[in-house]
Image 1: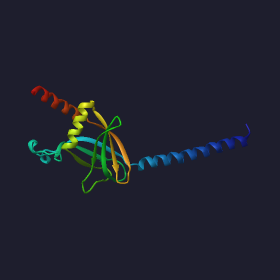
Image 2: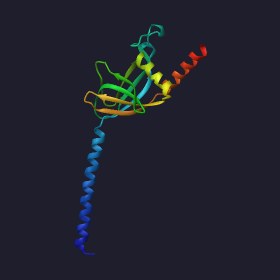
Image 3: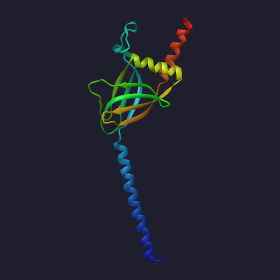
Image 4: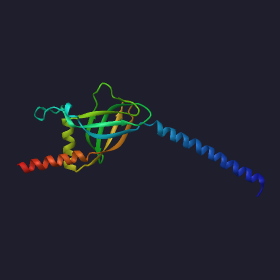
Length: 167
């Protein structure tokens, strides 16, 4: 083979490798810059709960959502929405003073009785054990993640069975 053709072919492959490396580097940097949140359903501590007979729809429920920020930038929350099969289950607008979750930190938000009862009702009626959580930031950035809510489903099923057996 001609040495000039060999030099041209190797130059083309070198140039294409450099371009591909730059593109992949930019894609990787963009993925690292995205907000990254993880959601976990937790039990509310007993000292934050009101007696069952004294609860209202705005009282703290037994359920809380813990949000972990494992991204590299702070995330300013505005609302949390729970979806199942593209149907909105609950829309939880946050009202705390400080809604910032710093990188590698977490915040817990206690659902009120109204939202907890709505989740239990949806879990019972539609047999939902997992939902999609969408966290919306003040800058309109949206982060989606799956949340295992089988604990709510199981509890709602037991409460319904206890109620039915007692009647």
